[in-house]
Image 1 (cartoon, helix red, strand yellow):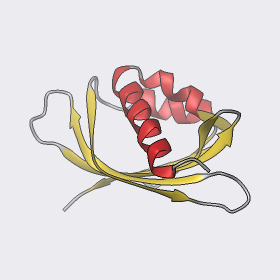
Image 2 (cartoon, one colour; image 1 turned 45 degrees about the vertical axis):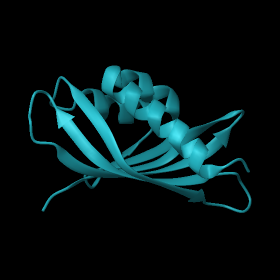
Image 3 (cartoon, helix red, strand yellow; image 1 turned 90 degrees about the vertical axis):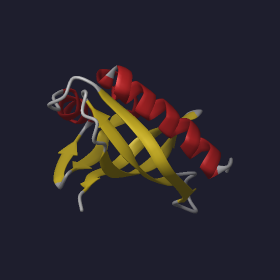
Image 4 (tube, one colour; image 1 turned 90 degrees about the horizontal axis):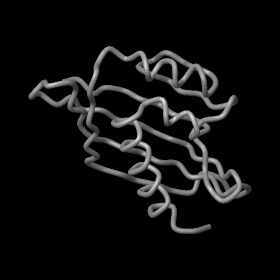
Length: 124
């Protein structure tokens, strides 16, 4: 397997850049069998995931990644588990929100797709 950390960095750079500039554009990163848990609510399928993301109640968002960890998640498939923490700047608020997000990436041809995605805001 190629370097999981390098793949995770490339993936998260693309994911958050796309999320911040064109939320609907991340649909290509999910499949019909992909699952997201957003703040405890499970969502199945690429179109449902993108519907959730595109209807979030803010106009502008900017992700700032603080930590990024990655490791292989299977001996049988070149899948990668990615853990991200960071800050969200929403609309024009000067107060960032802390978040954590975990992705399981599964190979698909020469790239990867998001099989699992768990997102949480971190309060406290």
